[in-house]
Image (cartoon, rainbow over all chains, first blue to last red; front, side):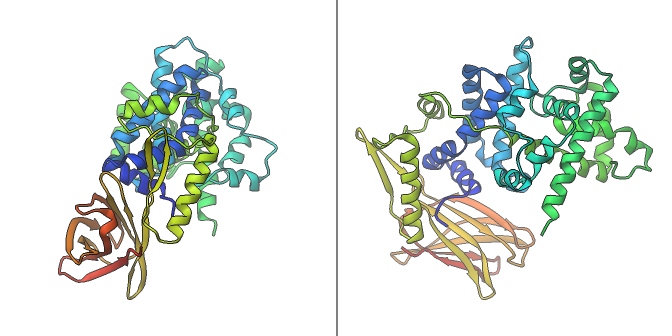
Length: 186
Length: 222
């Protein structure tokens, strides 16, 4: 094995290895920027968020714990939180779950095999998300990607609060079932 | 689907568990749910699973090429020396670098891969990687990576012991250096440390138990 794993790169970053940081940046900058763009819909704001996420990964690499998740989910979660902060600063900006879904190529046309190959670590979740009822999918994306509370989703979708909560919960649990099945498959 | 639907306290917080996992619960609701989750193992596990799902959804984000100059601005913010590239297009240069790194790594050569342009030099990480082995087989792997500083990363699995172990290395000149200690839990652990000797001088790495027994070793062939 010649190419450093994500875990090894973060380990190198934790001791200040700049070349590890450069490799990590080049491995993840397009995914991080892509998430920021799909959340914010603005290239300038997305660059600010993506850069801050990578700076934080560099400065705090020592707190990454591979037992709690992959490097990808760690750095994407940092990006999400920063983007949510940015969204809250400019509350008037409309959030469009379709933007994430379409940019993220959640396609109804993908075969399960294609969907599985597209996602390292979480095979099948792309197809599972595409397979959710549209109203559950929208609620989930608004909550997960845009950080909206159930009350926010309720207001935005013009549905009762209880319905918003149920949609978010049901969508999450369906995806969880997919992940459980995937993980337990030999 | 509740973890244990007959418990009314658990049933009462099922919707909120999802929001807790997403980090969108606030104020009194959050406090109330946390009070229950702290004493309920099943609900705590459920929150962890739902959080993992939320993280997985984020991996669906598209890959989009940032605008020109993104790296320049980023590396300035990070305080990282800005690597320049060959006169190749960016993607092509990356492929060449990775291919070169892969080739050198596959050959077990601990040589730096110099990418130069305009007098600035960037040494891509060219780790020397070796399996940690014991009499019972492979017990993990070691990366020794040159750089400023050079560093060593050990990942140990199924070593069959719990406790503090020590990483020692032998240099090409015959010296033996203790690099540091780390904890193995049920035979598993990983650890990184800046090397006190030049990375290209490391010949052998050992994982040594508290009583001095060698748990596993790796030969860093060059």
